[in-house]
Amino acid sequence: MATPKQSLTTPEDVALTRNGSESLPHLLSRLGDDVMQLINSQLALFKVELKEEASAYARGAAIMAVGGVVATIGFALLNVAIAFAVSTLFARANFSQPASYALGFVVTGIFYLLIGGIVVLVMKNRLARQPVVPPTTVEELRKDKQWLKSEL
Image 1 (tube, one colour):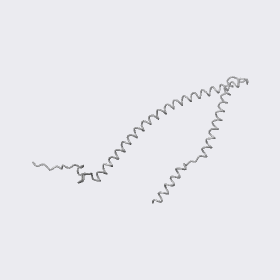
Image 2 (spheres, helix red, strand yellow):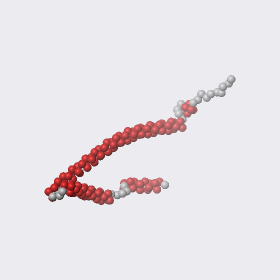
Image 3 (tube, helix red, strand yellow):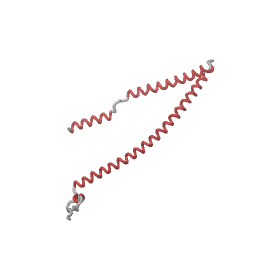
Image 4 (cartoon, helix red, strand yellow):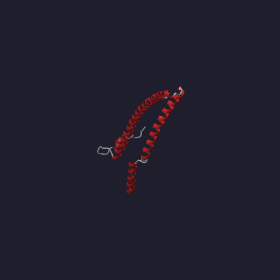
């Protein structure tokens, strides 16, 4: 039985020219494959680094949240202590004990309302002076628009 003649040449052999160097299309194909492999490996590295950083930020945020809760409890207890301390100032005014406690808490609350209101007003005025649109970005977009118009 006769078997069909098999080709002894491979695609790599076909890509070689007569002087033994690779043809341009084959080189470009290999270059494209190598670039894609490089991009894929860099993307994989980026994903790994991003996951590690996200994990670190998540742990840090959780610890900060716990610290914020503890600080809030401490702030609340401090405010109660301040209110009781202020209420002792009303002890000589012949108010009943509940009334002096109430006045201590009211005075402390008014103090915090004033301080908070001042902070809000100052920041509102500061933000009103701040431009809403970033000027550098707008200027760069205008330059890009002019460049595109001149190129077209």
